[in-house]
Length: 255
Image (cartoon, rainbow, N blue to C red; front, side, top):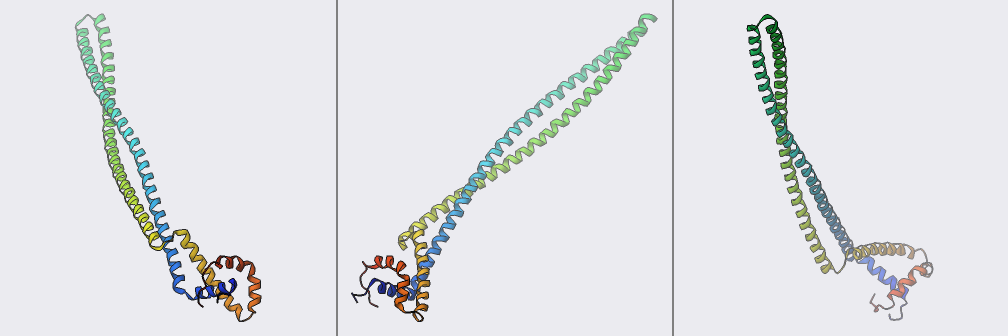
């Protein structure tokens, strides 16, 4: 059989390859395993990157919440100070009203001309002091309400900050788990590569070549009963010659 030409050897190898269903299935299954491994690695990597983005966004939000909380506390303290100041203004108007009352009493004891003028001034001062005192009380009450609302805002911001911290912790755990899973998948890929002696691209190429060879053998088998073999070889010569040159160095195998 040493005188077989490369084309006959190619036909013989293709026929034997078509019968080796176990080898074909193994190549396809190996390629599928590599594809699944790559999909899992990509999904784990994407989840880790998403967790990092979430942690980054949460950190930015926490910074904004902290700034708002500090501002709200400052405004609340300022409102309390203003409320205290208006309380002092109310006391001042009360004393002024008392002074005006005393002036009116003194004017009543004076002569009719001077006492009447002093009484009119006293009444006007008392009226203005009363209005100013009422306005100061209203402003003080409004500022107290604002301070109370700001306290509630601070409490809400504190809860938001705690929630953001929990989200950041969960994102960090997800990122750590993704990193562990990625390392595990890398280790699985290395072990699978050592066990099979192939890599993803090689496994995919072998599986595709197996399917193409099987299809070619099927087509040649169909033609063999209808067309002379010499005609088939002549038609396929441009394709077969490169393959035959690849096989010229192979040892002769029994049919």
